Image 1 (cartoon, helix red, strand yellow):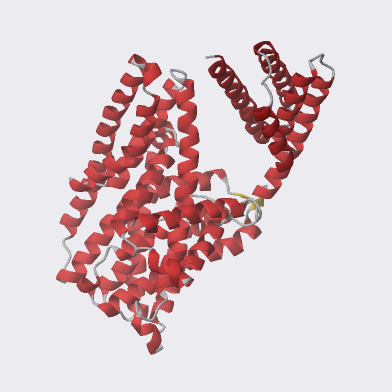
Image 2 (cartoon, helix red, strand yellow):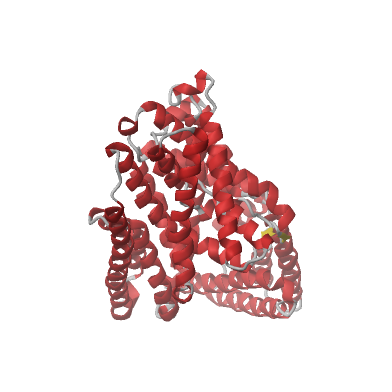
Length: 526
């Protein structure tokens, strides 16, 4: 397991590196292709453990939804509670019912199996959704609906799947009991999540406000383990672990807004930690998806592929068509435009969570033939949900800036900002040694020091005596002054409306550079 996790983590990191050189391609697709490559190489494929649904849900899905909840304002959830219930519960149930009945009639399969197919196809994946609209602008209302749906509909899908599986195995369905289980799982998840959030927040705030200067490490560790603990306990008491971790994340978003200045350094570290974990986990989702897809299309795991049966292909295509129709009509009834309704219909992208539901079903409980049909049909469904919007969205959505264009804009601003800083240094009277160091730091800021220059400066500083304390202070003050000049430039550029987002990112880098400079200087003095 350790070796398998290490390989997946390294692949996720490699995906991030490659994406810098292939900015026009979504990083999620890069991760998917790397996962496919891993599975096609026998050595690596043999080292990666089989897909374990419970580990996937608690190790990746739970923390991802926890982090997603932390980026969502609780007020937005409260103000859109009706819409959330509609898209995360009502739409899911309606789609599953319609898809189940029609699939049974068209494909001539039993109703329990058709409904099981439909139930597994209900959870949407926000991570997968981002991959199909890279560089495109999703309408605000549609984007908000898709985000809220992906936060909460996983729990509905899990309960529906359990209900349909019970129907398949026992041959009957208890509607009242199923409804009670759905309500208990959702409401219980909310109640447990809210209670857990109050406990965690109270503990965190107690640490931050009473032992402020010694609790940063404890805060970060607590932050890291929270989703795993909450999800695990929630599932043990048979309420929705997904809803519980989302609720904790939502309340911690409100907590952070009201306490961000209690310990700014720890809060900033938390934000960076969130970004890093989210990127790695997102990449891992698609690496795992790539590995899983290759393993699915294998004669040993899907025996009737070799028998010439295409029922799985027809099932996947039919379910996707029916799901899109239901989603389109649902959004259209809400008096939205045809274009927005189509964007909502196609924007409900499915990914590894759907396959996690499939693999949570025991092959013995439904039979090898039905299990193979289920796996292959859902795989086709997942692939179509990613490929169709990738092709269609460029024709119906407004074009924004892709990652490559954003990087070009930021590079231009950074170069102009750096030029102004260098010009300011050239006009300052500084001892040669100090001026050289300041200019070297500014070239680092612009990433123009090559590897040879780096090693030359490193060897010289190791060989010869360092500058005096007075010169160190002069060096620090000179850089701080230059940073102020650069911030003035960015302030001017922030007046240009279309450059605001890039300006703020660069401004954040400057403030972080100031913080690093001050911290390192004070530590050297100590």
